[in-house]
Length: 139
Image 1 (cartoon, one colour):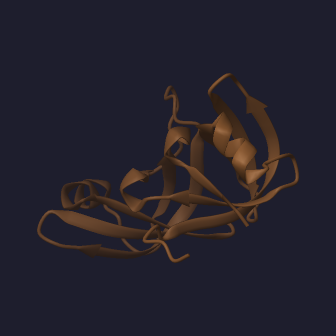
Image 2 (cartoon, rainbow, N blue to C red):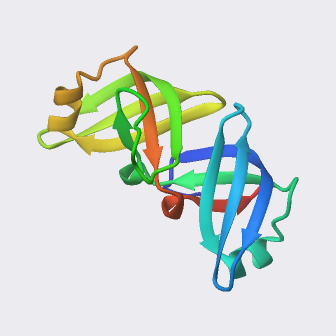
């Protein structure tokens, strides 16, 4: 299956905590960084996810926010450090490619945000992704 979701990071499930309807799945990305995905308990069952399962974490570019450093006092726990490799802007929006350990992410953010943050190739950033915006695919 080919997907329009460009952000596909491989990893391994390190823990699954299942509730009545939802589950929290912790994943160690191949680059060594940890993320958490909040998915349905049915999805965990359907995908056969357990500790040690190989997965791909999928994130739409519109769901990736960028900061110029780690952010404290926020509920978003998925904060992946990286470096900007490419910036493209149009009239209103920008596309920012970020190299992270083990892969690459693309963030679709406003042109104003690109300018306000001073984003250019080589800029250190932190990609912020809510756990509810991460989908998992069995690898």
